[in-house]
Structure formats: structure tokens, C-alpha cells
Image (cartoon, rainbow, N blue to C red):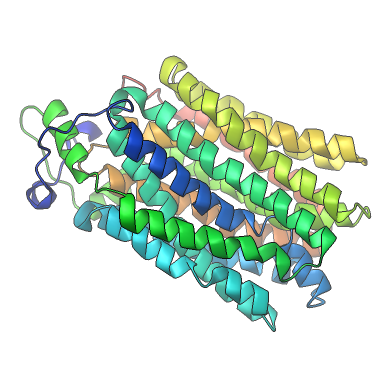
Length: 428
């Protein structure tokens, strides 16, 4: 099989608009780029609504004791988001990016209402199915569109800005819901902001976002020369998931990253509540992790454009494992807060760099499909993490579960060190 970079799908190219006078780069496309950054902040805020409060709703409003049942909302979210990523990537290549973005917001609109009025836990689980679709379609398309606009030279920086906006919004929404829950109650007040987030995200996407397929055509015209092959979607899936060693490394690291994030999302609030920590302090810890993660990506994405992708991913996975271990080796607020900060820093090294590596290797013409496949595996980590963490927590306890997830994270980083090839300026 020829190098991955030489693949394209001529059938797709014929359906794409002519690039006209399109120019690649952040400066040339700054208005659309920053609009997409803002929209992705609303996407992140939607999931941030649940980071502090929803696990506590399960225990306090519905009296659910089983950790496996409580984490079912993350399991359903992860499965659906993973599949939605695959859909978004594949059909963004077929239909364009903007229609998928709008569809994602339409599906996300009912989420805050379902949580506010839920009479039983099954409503929360269904709300997370819709949230998973919303996140998969909207976050994937904003990622893909920013890669389209930025071009190859600023890809890491573009992904850093994208993930900065999304995860800073996750943090702020997590802190806001924790504060509102402490001042009022677990429901309904903490979820009122979600209604505004969904309406604003949909309105901006429908009225102001422009399609970026022309930028893809421009990039294709700049990089293609000579004879090329046309892969099927099955071939792209196999190449991304397994055959290309760098793409395989990226996919497994992404899966483990979200496996540990799912555990942190679902179990850490319950773990801290077991120490009788106040809602305000749980909210601060729950918000600190994505805040550090979000803000640090302003720098880590740019660093990956200069230093390369591989070793930032390796170091980031190892730091994540260390941060998770802080939760079980400490028994007081500032130790847990330090763990959240370290975990956020490690995740910041990894998250935009993984996306940039996909963009390095995948050909522009099927890049959206490859991003969708990577995000299928990455967000499938939520489902794996929720199921594994729930079962372990119910059988061996929270501390052992947290230690196991930390160990898996460290092993994933070691795997990247031995398997992945550097992708910056040297696609595998």
C-alpha cells in the first residue's frame, strides 16, 4: 500500500465546490476560525453542565448506590458520541461540514430540559444519548473545519485553540453548575444556562458559519502530484485503526485518554463526596482539571508544531497517570486539587497533538473520515472507562479502581513511545 498521504477519493472531489480564491491559514480565515472557536465553546459548555452535578443527582435524587448504574450515563454518552463521530467524519466528506454541525445542535436542544424534568434515571440516560450525538456531530465538525481552514503549517496551533475553547468552557460550566447547586439545589437551576448554550450554538451555526469544503479542494491541489489510489471507507478505517502504526498509536492513546476522563467524570465526585467534601470544593476540583487542560492547550498545540507530536503524547500520558495517582495518595483538598491540575496538564499535552497527528498523516480528501474514525475510538473510551470503572468500583472499591486506570494510562504512553513514528513533516 502506498504512503497514506497519497490517497484521495475522486468521486468526492467532483461534488465539492470550486476553491476559487480560497487561501489557507489562520490569518486569512480569522473571522470564520474564531467564530468556530466560539461555537466550540458552547459545545464544551453543554457537556460541562454534567461534570459536577449529574453523578450526585443519581445518588441523592434517585437513591442509586451502584457505581455501575451511576456510570451508565457516561457509558451511553460514550457509545453514542463515538458512533456520531464516525457519522460526522464520513458524511462531512460526502455532504459538507455545515449541515452536520446544524444537525448536531438540533439534536442537542432538548438535553437541558430532559435533565431538569427527569422523573427517573432513564431520562438522564436518554438525555446523554442526545448529548453524545450533539457532541459527536458538533465537536467533530468544528475540529474538521478548523483543520480545513488552518492548512498544514498551523494545524497543531489550530487544534490547541479549538480544544482550549471547548475545555475551558467545560471547566467554567462545571464550576457554574457546582456553584448553582450549592446555592439552590441539584435541579433545576444549574441546567438553565444549558438552554442558552444550545440556542446560541444553533443560531450562530445556522446563520454565520460558511462551508469549508473549498479549502479542502485548495489543499488537495497544493499537495497532490502523480498517480494516486482511491481508498474505500473500509480501507480508511483499517488504515487509521490498525495498519498505519502512527495512526494506531494515536487511536489507542485517544481511547485510553477518554477512558481515564470517563472515570474522573463519573467517580471522582463520588470519591470526594465520600470524604464529606463540600459541593463548592468538589466543583472547584471538577472545574480545575478541564480549566488547566483547556488553557494549557493554547501552548501545547503550538509546541507540537515546533517540536513534533510523538514525545508530547508520550510525556502527556505519563503525566496523566501521575495526576490520577494523586487522588488516592492524598486525603485532603489541596492534594486532590494538585492531582486535578497535573491531570489537566498531561491531557493538554496529548489532546490537540493527537488531532494534529491525524491531520499530518491523513490525506486532505479523506481526512474528515480519518478524524471521525479516530474520534470513534477516542470517545469509545468513555464507554469502556464507564463500564470498567463501574464494575471495578462495585467489586474492589474506588481507590483500587483509580489506581488501575492510572496504570492503564501509563502503559498507553509507553506503547506510544515504542510504536509511533514522528508525523510532523514526516508522515508515516
